[in-house]
Amino acid sequence: MLLKILTAFISASLVIANSILFGSAVTLCGLIKLLLPKGAYPSVTRIANVLMGQWISVNQAIFWLINGSHFEIDDNTQLSRDKWYLVISNHRSWADIVILCMVLAKRTPVPKFFLKQQLLYIPFIGQACWALDMPFMRRYSRSYLLRHPEKRGKDLEATCRACEKFRSVPTTVVNFVEGTRYSHDKQQGSYQHLLPPKALGMAQALSVLGEQFEEVIDVTLCYPGLDESQSPFLALLCGELSSVVVKLDSIPVTQALRGDYLADKHYKQHFKRWLEQRWRQKDRYLSRLITRQGQDNQSLTTLISKDEQ
Image (cartoon, rainbow, N blue to C red; front, side):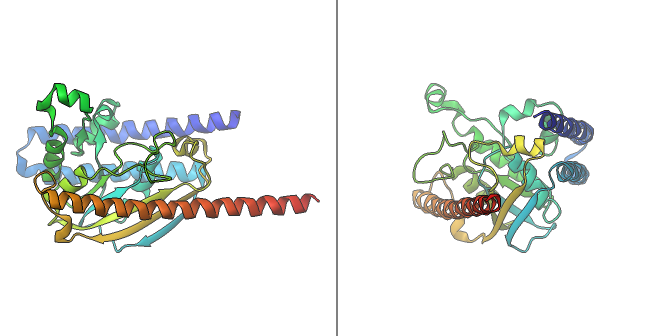
C-alpha cells in the first residue's frame, strides 16, 4: 500500500510539473492571439499545437515509466497529420484522454476535446485548453431550461464557434458522445458497458466541418485488467494499468451523415439510429473483450492451482 501511495504521488507530481510548464506556455500563446490580428491566428495556433504535442510526449514518457502498460491496438485506419478528423469514443475515465492523446498524437493533428465548462477553472490545464480553442460545454438540466429558455442552444453555439476556428489548421476533434463518464451506476438501457450516445454535438460538428473532415474515427477503449468498479486513471497513477485495448475504425464522411439535426426530422432520426447501431456494435465488442479476459484469468487460476498441487 505504501509503495502504491508513493508511486501515485510521484506520478501526480511529475504530471503537475509538466502541466505547469507547458500549460503556461500554451496559455501565453492564447494571450498573444488576443493581441494579434486574426490573420496571425493560424501561425500562433500551430505553435500552441506543437507545445501541446510536447506536453503529451512527456506525459507518455511518465506513464510508460510508471506502468509499462501493454497496448493492444486494433487499427483499421490510414491516418495523416495533415488532415482533419472527427474522433468519437466511449468514455470511462480521465485516463481515456491520456490514452487517446498517446495513441493519436503522433499520427493525427493534435487532439482537441469537447470539455465540460467546469474544467476551464483547473489551473494551467483549463487555461491551456482555452488557448487551444477547445470548446467548453455548459450542460443545463431540463428543469433549468424550462425556467431559462434563453439558454437553450448555447452548447450548440459553442460547438459552431469552436469548429469554425478549426478550419484554418488541420485538427483532430474528439467528442465523447455519451456526454459523461461511464460508471456501473449510470448504466442504463440496452447497453451493458456503455451509456446511450448523444447525437447533437457530433451531428453539429459534421454539419460545420463535414467537408473538411477526412473521416470519422470510431475509437473503442477498454481496460481488460480492471473491473468496472476500478478507476483506470487511479490505476494509471499508481502504476497498475497493465493492459489497454484500443480499437480504431474508419467511417467515411458521406452526405448521409451531414444535415440539419435540429430542423430536419428525417435526418435526425436517421443519424440517431446510425449512432445507436455503432454503439451496440461497440458494446458487443467490449463484452467479447471482457469475456475473453475472464476466461484468461480463469485459465491462469487453474494453472496456479495445478502447480500448487
